Length: 141
Image (tube, rainbow, N blue to C red; front, side, top):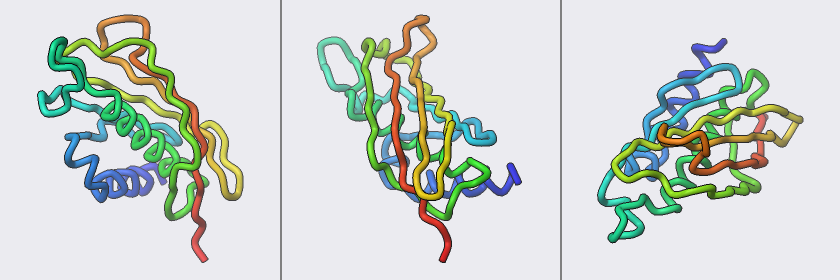
């Protein structure tokens, strides 16, 4: 079952134009959890003085990772969409580092999935950002 969910999550991410544009790569998928990397890219800089990646890129990373975690859940449907995503930015990512998002789908109802995530750059115990969200679960008809 995990291999099937892995394939589904990988297809989910590869079908998203923004994931391709950002260079997102799915590096790990488990049962209801996922890890995605956002490599540093000068095209994504939000502050030219500091070289810090724009918060919108981090937001897209976290949203995509949360969606992948939903798709990896054993009770996942055929598709998912973000209902609500709250992101708390703790600090700027260190320039020229890869940002890693790890998400876990910790509860699933018939139509809604509940997810939490963290993004880090490996330079501090303080994450770059944390997120909690709800995602619609589309069931096959």
